[in-house]
Image (cartoon, rainbow, N blue to C red; front, side, top):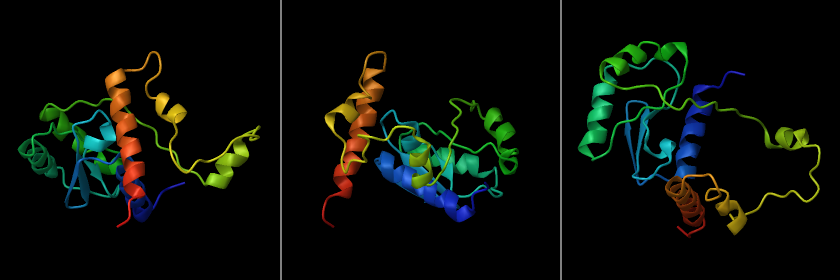
Length: 162
């Protein structure tokens, strides 16, 4: 299923709401989240659609991050409209790291895939067991703390009266 530009923008904005970066700038169809934590999505520039973007924006986006005291990072889709970006990024010393597969689905459809749903529920807030999954054995304690704080902080922020 191909996503519309509106769907892509909604997903990217919701992603940033979930990871709650310290700051988000915008520039020509891009979100520029900036954060000192370890959550990559909270500190990587991302396009709001997968159509054509001018690769010369790389320099401007990178300059924005550097001026704010952050290392520039780009989170780009592996789609034909970004094929011109890869040589530009490589020429400026950027490297591809940590590919991510994003999947979408309707909640009812996802729940229907589970064979056993007895005792399964969707909670209204994170509990200690959920938070502990970021801090378990074999996980990076600094990264886990950063992720759990970002996600818990966002939950609390969403529940504060305006």
